[in-house]
Structure formats: structure tokens, C-alpha cells
Image: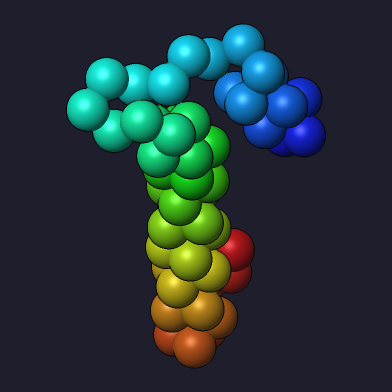
Length: 55
């Protein structure tokens, strides 16, 4: 993950129209999707636990 952050700030040019915010978007959008998937998996496992089903 740290390699992606470093590469996005060193090798990626600024996006036209967004400027430097384009570089931030390259890192934060995938990280946000990973967080959403983690929360959904935790919710699914919590429901299974509360219903008493084996995981």
C-alpha cells in the first residue's frame, strides 16, 4: 500500500481539471471500497452469528 501511495505522488501527473486532487483520488477511492467490503463482510458474519448458523 505504501508503494502505491509513493508511486501515485511521484509518477502520476496531475489530472487536468482536478489538479493535485486527482492524485489523492487514485489512493482514496480503492481504499474506501476495501473498507466498504470489510464492513459488509463483518455485517454478514454478525448476522450469521446472531442467528446461530455455523460460519
